[in-house]
Image 1 (cartoon, rainbow, N blue to C red):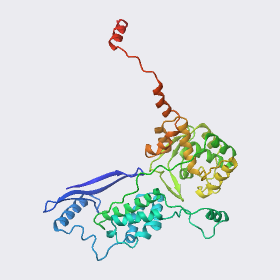
Image 2 (cartoon, rainbow, N blue to C red):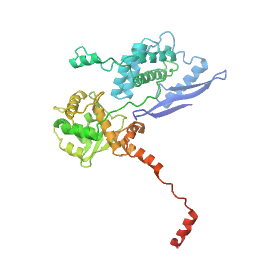
Image 3 (cartoon, rainbow, N blue to C red):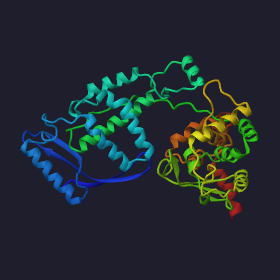
Image 4 (cartoon, rainbow, N blue to C red):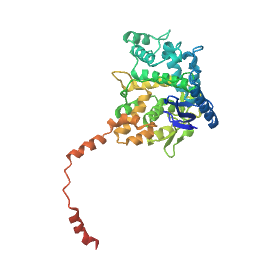
Length: 406
């Protein structure tokens, strides 16, 4: 038998396992065919029975024909609920919402009525070409728009979708097709080839002077939150989910245990908790921030967690008061996280330490701050100006040192 329990780690750092059948079948004409499928019954016996059924279907020539018959083809729209159910069982709430939005806005309008068995490489390339011509709808137009929003519409035209956005859509399409293969709906999922390796998007951060000025002019009720964001690098959802029992102020430690996204509580990004050391200024600020409104460190008047909407205006007011502007775009809460990573790199902190403090899954994510490190590159090129070491006769050195050893 070729049934085995396959184990792997997702991009979010979550451990998964499933029983899988993997074997090579040799046909009567000598042709070999490899079959790799997840068992519909997730036990060892179930996987072994599934392998016997697959071998029998291959031997009888019925393999794949019963799954994709022409009498009742399953369309992509028909299969979409299965993908969402899988995502709800295995992904974070934010990931489920993201998949639902991608399906609604991009995949279903193009492929919704197409039978899954009829989606091949040519159809996928047509879809990619269609996506490259599509305009961004990131900021949907409201019926009752503000005057400021109307003026902004008149000044700018919708931009084409970025290749990164298109790759995110292709990732969802790939997952849907591979899941259809695992469920036996199609014989083999076509390859969905994303666009090539893309450059990392640029990021913005506050200089040391801008960060100090922002904290100096911030409204008192928001100053501690801004200080924690700049000095700990917590993501916005992690700031919202921070509770008092996550703090060990006597030891200067903050434990990141949860994130709150649209009111839904979950594990931090990557599925891992982490501990962040606090500088003295943050410890003092948090000690002075004590309140009795509930378990959340930063909350509304009634003790309920903050929301992204309620956090937007205070940051904007502080930026205007500090006179901090940008020619393109504006500083947001995630840029305060970039400020933390950038300041650590500029102070010479090793990238591996920055990775651990920021909770990055891979060092590649932290490498975006490498160019800010003041010493690494300077020390690397400094060796070019060092004089060559004089040649040394190791035997003469040993003879000179011999009397000292007696």
